[in-house]
Length: 219
Image (cartoon, rainbow, N blue to C red; front, side, top):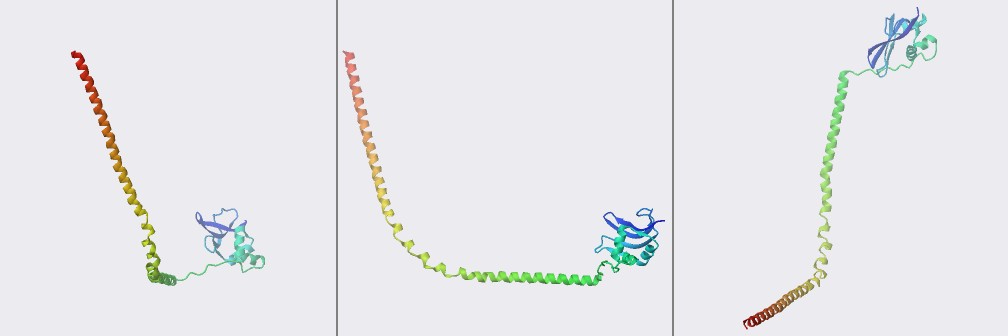
């Protein structure tokens, strides 16, 4: 009977973990095993690899053949080098650091939170101090001399050129407009009088013609 050292899959979808087992080569991957000699959790960081070295050496010595994945794991642990006599029996297995106690982790988290709060309070105080110092710095330029400086109250406001000839020219233009307005009504009244005389002359001529006609008809 051919015996193999292989991996038996367990776990959920996308979260597998394996057992290193010794089983008949004709059985299924997750079928019946003769003996379980190790564990392999690939999702852990670093990956968890636990192997019973004595049982591995025993089964290798009696002719059990490891599969390729199991051979890689045995090289990492150094068991394959022990069996073949190759250098590197110490292996390259990485182990996870031991977890600290819950109390120690809690105390460390509390210290970190206190330090962060103190840092935030320090930044707030520094911002408040900077805001308080800004008005004092900006007050000096506002009360400086430029408000009472001479250039703003200089001569251009009282200068004569602005109140010169244009003000004297305006009355002359107004007088000329008034004369033109007075002459225009006079001319209009003269034209109306001549029209009235012409109408009166036409009326007297028509009356004379009417009188002459009446005298002719009587005769």
